[in-house]
Image (cartoon, rainbow, N blue to C red; front, top):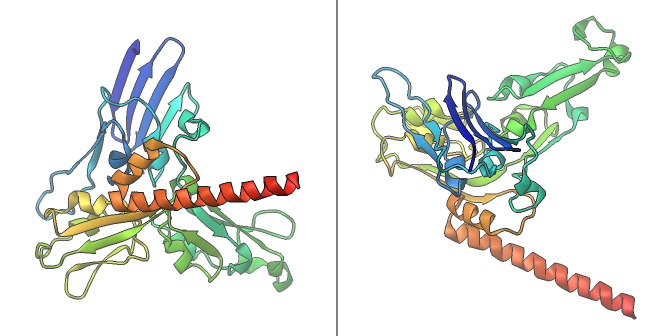
Length: 311
């Protein structure tokens, strides 16, 4: 049992802490990055995380759902940290973010597969930096002399040809929405979505004039207001976080179905249960079957290698 427990709910951060004799566990929720989605609450094996819909004042935009964590239930396992697509939660042991569940491979890391080829970049373009809805991209230029280029127009044509584009993406906070990929020069950025799925709006059940889901959506362009004054989904950019679902005033007007999650290899009952909550029983079973087939193929291949060595 901890010698001391601490919970602080400030404007920008929610912190939980366990103080033991030789260990100190600390969980920090960065409210400036939290979008009020469903991911951490669904993944949490202890049901310690809850999302609470915020009251809406007439005439104002809807507010993102508030995330709260029960200190009595939380055991600082780090699953919320690893699963959060926005990197809003960090769990530390004695000040280090090296989580045991990753070291022991009992839980996978969510893959943020982002590839950058700056050779395809227009040297005068900063469209990806401007387009990123979370301001996670920074574009800088380095001249032929290795120094930063502040004014590209001041260079000669030959100097411009030798300018190097440097594109920095804060991947740990990126939900892989793909906005940058489609706003940037073709081939400059390629993004594979970490979470696949489908978000559906039932227009018949959607309240007239309601834009609550659009108000809270963290990804510019994932939800759009059509000419019919109804909100529509752009599956191309949606990251299926569920922030929209958490504020929708009608239960069946908006649904978010996650079908698969791109992650590192893992063999764990903990992940299987989390996957079932995040997607569905059928989709989780589908992934387990694929993993089983892959394991069988590896076993057969290994057997053939051993037989060849014996020969």
